[in-house]
Length: 295
Ligand code: AMP
Image (tube, rainbow, N blue to C red):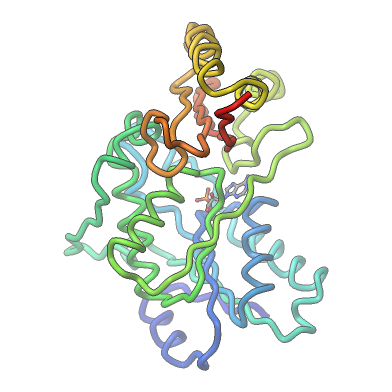
């Protein structure tokens, strides 16, 4: 039986009664797929108690974004979690799992709620932060609140949302939170498209078009891997300029993977980050690659 807590009050009582054990936390907006499940599985392996939050957080959606239409599938999500527990034998190992899924937005943001957690612009003022103003403040605000309710030892974030991962890591470090953040690799469909709850909005034709995103990232990755960065830089800039002629691109950038700044002499690894709009659906993806300095 998976315990599902639907109010903050219920959750606080549950948390106060939890035995002293290793707690892993996986924050999600639900509509679980293999990407989410890989985070949950990793938490189950490495903790005694795994807590999953399922909450579509209005503060991280802009006024013209898809908050209303974002898929809410709690019943199906609980089945997916039960299947995972059963199939991988976690039940028999005595691993525990609970779900915090606030039934109303007011459980998280009561009418007099007035605090925002904001990490400043050096990480959040670029890439998705530029096209989605306020998005990352919404993310850090809800994640901080969930951290303080759940009090986890370890938290699991997908590298699919790489900028989000960096920002949460920064918040944990800046605020001296006693939490270990674990980045998890991107799970992809067989055609290379990163799994996302938004992929279901795509028609068959749109899905084919969307493949340009992982393909372009791969092409840039190959270019970087097969040249010294001094040479690769120019090829990559040309490639990016050419791709961006197609207006479906929101951004396509190669940045230092820790600072999200333009790569410099001391950059070891870059993140190739891209976002496209296919019809009404916005998709993001990225690849990490080490730079070569001698070749
Ligand atoms: P979301 O429900 O979209 O907010 O995602 C919840 C968590 O799952 C975040 O840490 C995401 O980065 C992670 N996630 C989403 N899609 C994937 C994927 N394809 N592979 C790995 N992690 C993912």
